[in-house]
Length: 139
Image 1 (cartoon, rainbow, N blue to C red):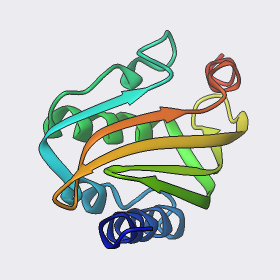
Image 2: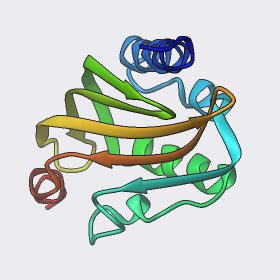
Image 3: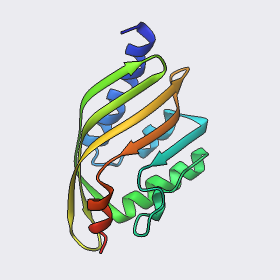
Image 4: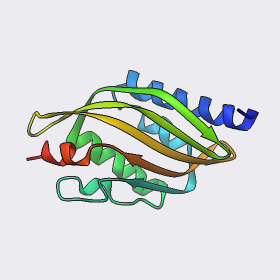
């Protein structure tokens, strides 16, 4: 791993550790890791029951994503098990457990996040998870 790849992994490893320990109350820290021209995408892509997952193209839009995520879901646990870095990209492989605040249903899903960084800031993010389970938990 190059020094730049190692630096990017450490930045993200710290962010995920804070996310887990704070039970998703570290959005402000994640916001500080983002470039102003962030592109933030989710496999949910704004589906019914997960409208907050539509694509975000600015920091204020990502802030809205975090606010709506927290309003609808309670984080139970989040583990970042592995990081794979190549060039300016870092992939995090892990697992997340969330409880829907309205239905009380729990989703336990594998998680893969793909980040692209520039000068130590996240400029592109795409998350992959079990969308069928997540959307099913909203009803």
